[in-house]
Amino acid sequence: MTRKVLALVLIIFSAIVYQAVVPAVLSADVLLIEEVRQAENMDVPPNGMARADVRARYGDPEKVNAAVGDPPITRWDYGSWSVYFEYDLVLFTVIHKDAMPKSGD
Image (cartoon, rainbow, N blue to C red; front, side):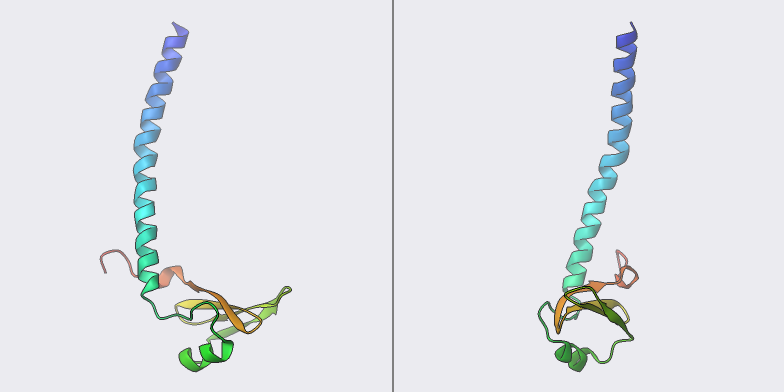
């Protein structure tokens, strides 16, 4: 009798967790994909662009953070994104979370 009750409790618990977690995970994946698509349409420095070219095209950054580590990694902050350099070349650009348009905008 105890095993049947335990099995029933586990089945009910699994069903509740499945209904609560799976839809949230699936919708999170869709939102992430939409943000990636929106980010691809933003005008930000591409990987490999020279530091001088970034300054010429996008202007002076709002803040220049000191180089860290070896090789030296430098971050320039602009209004809605930050660009990371290794030596003189763009490693990657990060779009600030609050700069992403909300769904339906």
